[in-house]
Image 1: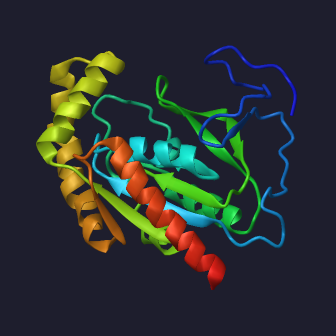
Image 2 (image 1 turned 90 degrees about the horizontal axis):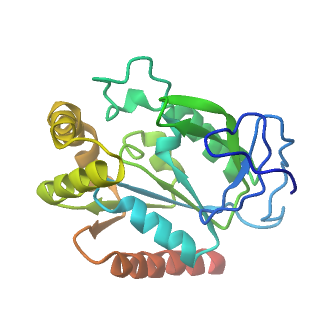
Image 3 (image 1 turned 90 degrees about the vertical axis):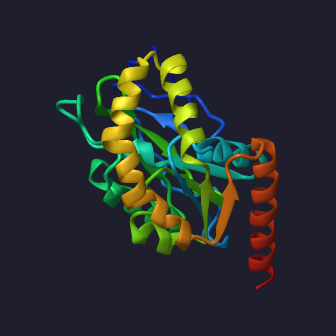
Length: 244
């Protein structure tokens, strides 16, 4: 794959050569996407691992760490946010804020051994870009997000479902640190959003998923320990499937 790398923030009409650690290749809207699968026609359907849990609970760190250990690609549910005309006061923690229909369609496509263009969401403008990130199927496909298991269609596609469980107070501390230090937000704004939408939506849509998963992980443990544990589980499931 060849072409020029666009300047930061300018993805329109560009073709990207970058291969990221999550197994995704970046493509602009004028690129010709390849539809073949690197798995090959005779290889099994990808093994889908879906990781859910509350905000700042450690699920993204876990998923990224697992991608580094396995032949896998990572799909974040955050990619599928809908365009927002008025960001202030918008409820980003309700399932309706995300285009999960497209996520399910993309996962179905990967399950058939075909590549797919993943949406690219610009959190600065709260809009979806024209560019897509093209991903080929891999032996393991990881899907992670706060609300990713709130939709039963995603759970039905999954071969392994995981919930990262972490106390509310620790998640809030982590979220404040992340949003203030890394994203330049003020503490009052973070707390206002947490009380208005994050906490009530967690209780309504996210926490109930804990009782419906295959595997619950303790988000207070060191990230490397969680990655080691989940890697062992996934490899055992893959070995069992290959023998079946």
